[in-house]
Image (cartoon, rainbow, N blue to C red; front, side):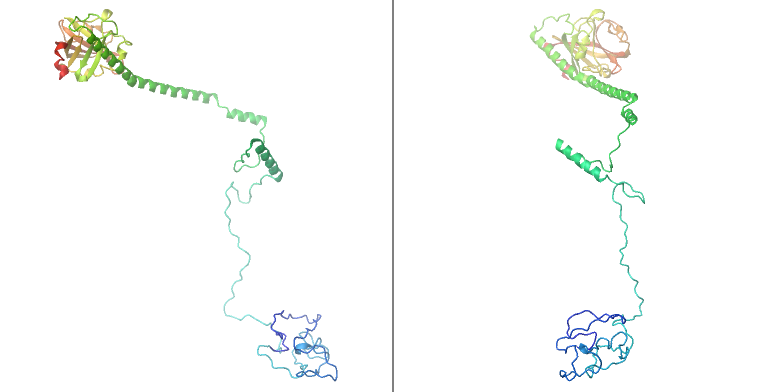
Amino acid sequence: MTTGSPWFRANDEPGPEPIPQDPHGPRPPAPAPGYGQPPTQGYGPGQEYPPGYAEPTGQGPASGYGEPAYGESGYGEPGYGEPGYGEPSPHPYGQAPAPHPYEETYAGPYTPPYEPPETSEAPEAAVETTALLEAVEPLPGPDQTAGTGPLPGPGRAERRRAAAKGGRAKGRRGAPAPPPPPGAGSPAAPLSRVEARRAARAAKESVGVVASRVVGELFITFGVVMLLFVTYQLWWTNVLAGQETDRAKAQIEDTWAKGEQGGAEPDAFEPGQGFAIMYIPKLDVVVPIAEGTNKTKVLDKGMVGHYGEGGLKTAMPSDKQGNFAVAGHRNTHGEPFRYVNRLKPGDPIVVETRNTYYTYEMASILPQTSPSNVSVIDPVPKASGFTKPGRYITLTTCTPEFTSTYRMIVWGKLVDERPRSKGKPPALVG
């Protein structure tokens, strides 16, 4: 360590770097002597100096570390009788020690202890320490135009009142008050009387709206009722008629079983009473025959009715001469004669009574005639092709289908009479 250098210290302990002082300002006091160095106060005349130290030749007290005392030399202006800045001054203790290899000589003007090396590269642009502002995406919420901020919320007093009101409601009902809808600000102002009337009038439905609603509901109800009625007519009546015909057929067969075999067949029956069974093999029809053509008691129950009352009374199958005429539904209520229009000449029609099977063959058909044309059931029916009395059968039904505007007529002629004791006729066996 070089002594006397202002940039080095006697020991390696860290310390503050020297700061150049103002040459015209006050000078700091001399530092305290270090360990193993002579004191800073001077020695009097005649006193011995320690070995290695020479008697100072300058004026004034000598400072420690081989440095000039205050007022003798420094970085400022020279003191009284002292050399100027840059001129060598005699060492206070004799010969000055050799300069340190790293120590700088104060022969020229003062230069800073460190200068950045000069380079040929262009200096880098100074980077501003101020953080750059970045665009921030707006938070979801009400649309905010440029230059305007979000709407102010309720004040502190309003929030307190709302909190107090919510607490009271929770204490009374045991549940917190529902939160306000999103985006709702302060509560809406109460409406005036005129505005309340207008709002009530607008909320009230007009007479036209109510009337149209009632009419629409009536149409819907009517449509549902019609659908149910059609379902009843086309499907449910056939189900009920099938049950009725099964019971009537069983009852007729039971009556025949209880009666005397081979006895005379009665000439008349009570209205609605079943007395025979008709078979149409081509149409797969098996239907009871009852006395009379009453719609409720006979036809709507799925049975075939015999014209045997009043002026429309016709012959029975057992009569030796005459026209056995019957009627039946073509649609709904069992519809036994729905497909009689498919019969062709020669197709068998069998009537079974208590003692006999009567077999007829289809002869002719009248597709359409008036309901008032009763000549079709005469003993010798007109338009049938028959010209003389005989034993005939006539089937009558409504036409077109699902209407009762006209009548369809089918005629047949007896070709075989067979006792039941001999078994079924060939038309039923085949």
